[in-house]
Image 1 (cartoon, rainbow, N blue to C red):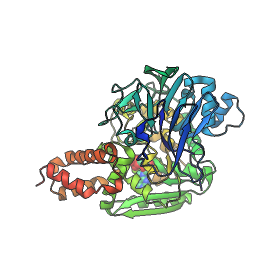
Image 2: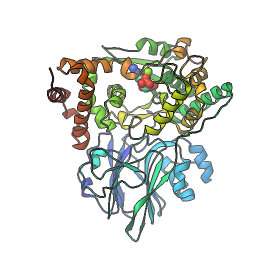
Image 3: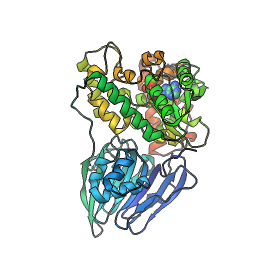
Image 4: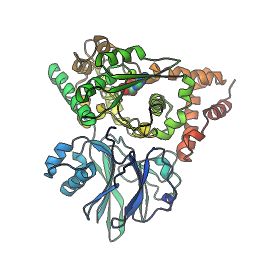
Length: 507
Ligand code: AMP
Ligand code: MG
């Protein structure tokens, strides 16, 4: 079995016990519930562990106490920086970094994590550079409650309503604030008294500047950094790659195969569409242990409550991207897996913008997308966590992302080809047809968009009202699965569809 993080989620109070956490919190994440007991640090709650032999969730040196969900990817460099010899667990390493650098530690660590660091005079709550493990907090004069799922804190007393610096309000939930990507929120306290407002420490931001390397050097740098990112996520482990057969996931599959030997690959298709031929060609080329999962498109749409419970968003467009993956993760055998995806490559490379627009436009949409990803929760580990698996995304590795964003746009679209620099970086490692394959979004390849449209039309929604009806379905699901924490298997998509069709004046 692969190594998964010790902790993949948590809900915890700091300062004063939060009665809200007395009941079992309604986590959507699958896994063992492990009590968090930190009497001396003044915190308590529950952590989620994917394994059966759960480690204690807290790491402490008597002064600082660290609660850490997720994993770090620059362990060796961090260990060298803190001069601590062998790195130990990720939580121990973060603790050592906090001892040496204070809150600046979060500018050094590269990972996929949410963390709480409790010290005698300060509490720090932080996510990774991409906010890839969403983290929510509720504040009161007496303390704070922090959780990796909004639904766990949705029913709370309101607490402070103004969003503290470094946070954003959570739609529909009064007094709940989401920690922004690349941000650590620090709150000081002296002799049990909290000093509001909190302070935001920005730990990462996407580059606005662009570099102009020699094209050959750019290609080599992309290959190097992506290789390192895949190694950090897969080294020596049996991993699974969710494979569409497009360049992004095929590159990850190729590099994972090189890192660990044979990997498992899985492709999802429906009766409304699939990319099986493209994925099969890659699987055969790399010699992966390949599986095709085919399901009726209607079954895919019936998974919407799970996608909403996992992503905790109400944006139907983003849900269309995430739903097929959630459905796929839920159909894998139950033994916990370490899953690598090709998700997110299109954002720094402008891959969605397929037509040959002027480079100014291409760079403009890249800058805009890098400014607006926060809060979409596209990278959340809960998407696979609802099925008990751990997923990670090499293209949003901090070093890969820094490089891809900063390349001048003429390296991203070149010789009439989108994502040129990535395709060139994979030359010789993938079949020629894969290197040249045009972009197909997961919602298109799986036929989801067309099937969802058809389902609404069949329910009597007029063609012009379909986008609004999708929005209404997403909002209704968000209200049930997040605001009211209803379990996804208790929500019937047919009921949601009927309600929306009726309200939308179905014909
Ligand atoms: P895309 O929207 O095509 O960029 O998809 C994002 C990521 O989701 C890909 O890089 C793959 O890792 C995964 N993916 C997309 N489509 C499929 C599919 N049909 N089966 C399995 N994984 C997929
Ligand atoms: Mg694709």
